[in-house]
Image 1 (spheres, rainbow, N blue to C red):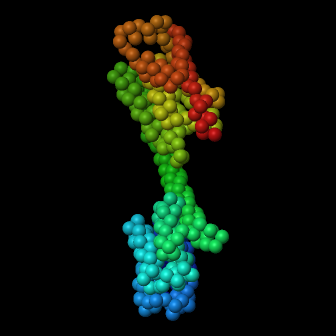
Image 2: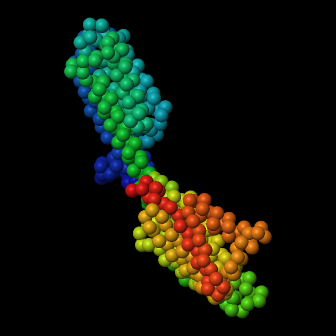
Amino acid sequence: MAVSRPPRSTGIAADPAAMWRGLDDDDPVGPMWRAAQIFRAVSFIYALGFMVAINGDLQRPTIAWVLFGVLTAANVWWTVGYLTGFGRRWWFVGVEVALSMAMMLSTEFVATRDWIADNQTWPTTLWMANAALSAAMIGGARWGLVGAVAISAANYYVKGEVMLNFGRNATAILLIAAAMAVGMAASRARLSHARLVAAISFAAQSAERERLAREVHDGVLQVLALISRRGREIGGPTAELATLAAEQERVLRQLISDGAPPPTDTDDRDLGPALRALAGDRVHVSTPAEPVTLDATVVAEVMSAVTNILDNVERHAGSDAQAFVLLEDLDDEIVISVRDDGVGIEPGRLTQAADEGRMGITRSVIGRIEGLGGTARLESAPDAGTEWELTVPVGERKADLQ
């Protein structure tokens, strides 16, 4: 999701706050990165004050100032990298953690053992906490914990002991807690951003689909419906053209109406819109106002069965036959009734077709529904139309969604 940037300007009239916000980018953790650099600046000021206060007590004060200068330059580079975004890389954060640990370990070289026993490392653990926070923002709570433990381990190594008395020294526990909290916040920000982008994308696709549906319905679908109706009326060779037009009308309606399901954490779809997409001049669909959400695989199998039934109505029920599709949600199961007012089926016709090796209805309808643990029942008689009743159990799936 693109974020507009303020126009670049070298004039003094530029808004500093807008320029600061303009440093953000597509990274949803961008605000946290910027806030962390404010903490870096504050911790640097504290470390500088500490260095001024204790430098005269060090064994090698000049070398300590040189190391402080190197670490200051590195922090400026890290700040620029994290603010502008090019430094939000694993290797970049890894270098910060490694150099921070090295500077902490250098305390043994610039200070005496007695001084170390009474003080923290010369870079100060507050300043070095930035490395743990960077690890947390790049990798979440898990890597924040790793970074915090690494910095704490370097501190304990310099001190020569592991401080288990947190009443006297709680630095490690506070550092670990802060890093994990920042890591969890960063992970949640990325997840929320991904969901928001998906929702916006779906909303845009739905709006465009609605626009196309209106335009197509006013033109192409009406023409196809007219060709289908007139072709059946004329009969003869044009009957095949009518059948093709009707098929294309149904496919086009499904294309512009069904669309992609809303973004969720599960592979579920609403059966209602999928069935409504089959509606046409000769097909009438009625579904509940509330969503009938099922596993996407179940929806696909049910739609295939219903489509096959409607194809048979188109081919065999008669040119004027009307089909009626009704979806009922009974909590622990759904029932789809597909009825037509066509010529019907003679008794024993389906059994005869199966004996002759023609397994279309058996496999495409009954087999699919029974494969879902449901039942498919057919009632028909000559000149009395046909009615399919497809029942699919869905109780367990619905319970999982609530």
